Length: 178
Image (cartoon, rainbow, N blue to C red):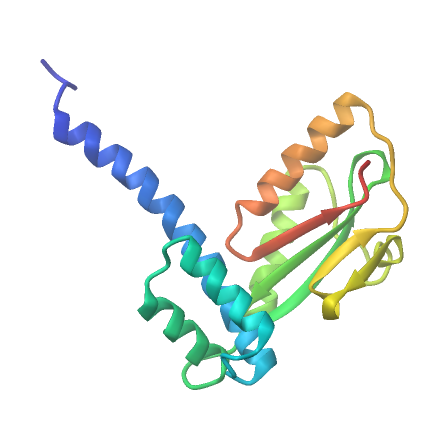
């Protein structure tokens, strides 16, 4: 009876769940590193404390959190930086892609590749930023003007955002879609 091994089924399911948890842990670690760098490693900083609490809520191990705080404070290894990329999507929707990276060139190429697969290009810096207002020091963006899209354009935009969010480099994606 080929294909009926209980261990094989468990192994495949475990691999999928481990990959999802690993990706989530990586995103939390990058966020903690950035907040640690901004606060100088002060764990009493409200933003860093919030990032640590969010990581603990998702069961990130204590050692991983401590390592991310130390790395962000510059104790070991390279520091992460936050970079924003801009693009225009279907129906003229402005898109801001916020990335956390230790290598600007690699992240730019990866995002450019994802966008080109979807038939889009990176826009010039500042060309899409006008459609957003920022709060809390450039961490989140809120659309000042919104664009109504057809059902077909909404599907295309969702596909683009999903492809971007699958990347390890991309932290968040903001759009002006209504």
